[in-house]
Image (cartoon, rainbow, N blue to C red):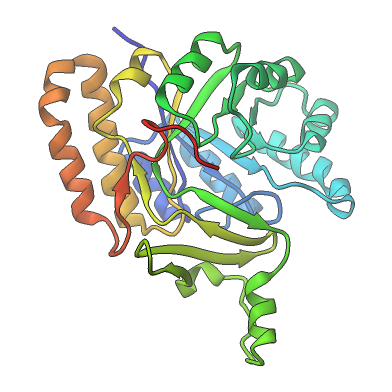
Length: 310
């Protein structure tokens, strides 16, 4: 039997942790805004401990995001946070800044590291470079196609993670662009840090596209107008033995994530154990996901079947 990829999801709170594990997730990515980028929800230290206990009781895994880029004032905090994660027993740390790697090497050398910079893991040399520095997994850029993913997996010395569902980041600036705009307009509209709840969009009438935009401690984030969905195109990556499939739950409800996780769980299992039945049912899975999509957010296949356009 072929190797089954890990199904990795991003819960927004502890209730979601329980529900998404029950729906079939194998692992979760959580963390706090101070150290992690574009998280589905805020998990302070007590919540990380609780989520880890829940996961380990069920034989599941917890990865914590430390994939922000750190300026000098935060570097001194990293050792304390890594030490906490080590004592809590989390299964891995996602990082994008070598400061995290250096800190982990010093404080918790056995900790598993996942290299994730969102956009820059586009070839197997990069994956292996960070693997030789200590990373055990590379999170591939969302802007590469299926052929490139398969080729990277064939040549990688580390595990490979690929996002299969959800929105992707198109732009980030450390500047608080929304707040600055409001000020420029002379509007007394301070931007709350729970800005994700305000449902702000940039609108492109030419393409009839709405780009979700929010601001947090790490700056301003502009997200893709469509959601990736390749529930009906899993064969090549399963045959290539890609290690982890990620569903990103940013700006999605727990109900949405629960249904999506359950459908991908079923699709992955069938694709591995009964390919013919998967081929028969994959259109049905896609249709079910289209039915629960938020208004104005189409599903597409991202860059999986086309060349990158930067």
